[in-house]
Image (cartoon, rainbow, N blue to C red):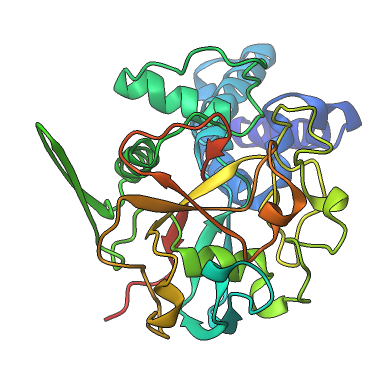
Length: 332
């Protein structure tokens, strides 16, 4: 009899899951994705097992729903970065027809890596700030909406965010940070599996579309208005990430919206001596690189090859943000 009740209940519940409006619940819409349903299935079985303690079908239903919600809430993706795998390859970095610091064009080969599909948002930053008791920046001229890219971020802020994310996801942090009275030293283990900033070469390769590049001027198009919020269409404020056209590999806002910090120190002559395999930038400089242009800059700054820089210790510009990266496979 108990077996029959079990089967009957599963039949009713699975029919409910096919009911059209069921998918519009805030939590249950994630059942569409197998990776969430796989975990949900385990909690569902757990709920059904314990539902034997009652003969009330209504209570059985509530218990299983509760277990399902508990499972999915624990796995909600809001705090997990949405990243894309960029297959490694060889490309020609820089430009011989633009600014002096983009010259010369040189061949670069990169390993596989992951990079954030979108810029880190205000909502994601708030979780970090609350966890480490870090103050949010003073309210800017615009409202800090949750789906805006987080700006007023310094390079050191971005580094600490990456290490916090690595610890949260039980990964090996990439950065070793040494703080002293008048110094802030950072070294990066690029073989660690934690989160980090992309290198300048990784950023440009991804912005160009990786191995699927169609050689657009901007990331995803030759028409900047299709892919970027910049000085002439942004109304001098950020816009929600991911609203415009993605580039060839599915990345959003690589041109415009927020400047993006990368790992490398900035040197306007670095391209003349850059290594050809997995370059990580100069050994030392007063500045770190920013890429991608921003909501306040002109179209030229949003080109995929354009370079910019900021004083890395304390520069928190009103359009400076970032996206995160990870090394794909730890080489042996």
